[in-house]
Length: 237
Image (cartoon, rainbow, N blue to C red):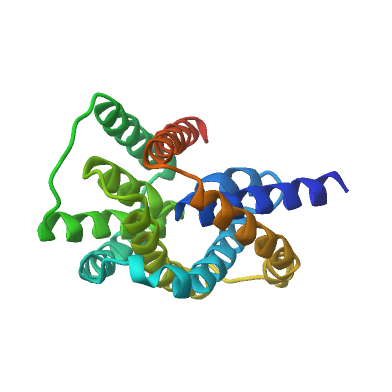
């Protein structure tokens, strides 16, 4: 019973975070889902529900999507996904997590010190590639996008819209990769179905919160999520 209650709380809070910011479901849900489920089930529940949220929200946020950037992110991710799969199959993931965590925490510190970068087409592709690598290797596409958007002072509407559109693609492809190369289980799909009512509630609450988040609060929330992600990857062994 405690596991079911924990599962419900995790899904509700992660859905609210994803809907109000455009990112964060996998960052928040995956560490806690791993306490309840096996790694393949936890990752696939995360992918399924993230895909559902992105699909539901895309019609509402498509006016905010930078489609040129989305296209470049997608091209980059197609390059990065096979690299990430190779890393997952051949390299010690604990070492990878340590490297990624140090990189995230270092870049977040630079952002806190007001370091900024300019957006270019080449950087868009590179960020998409890095996101594809992390998606296939550790199931977290968000940190590269989040760091990039924060460093370029992107408005919260554009950040949320473009990120959700990209997630719709990357989560679908990642789920296919998981099913083909890792396999799937009835348990993962059953719990995903059971979570849908909580996702609907989270969608409503998250959308209301988004309307009341100003750019400053949004940026602070971004930094908190990045620091949490970096610390989680650093100590998750």
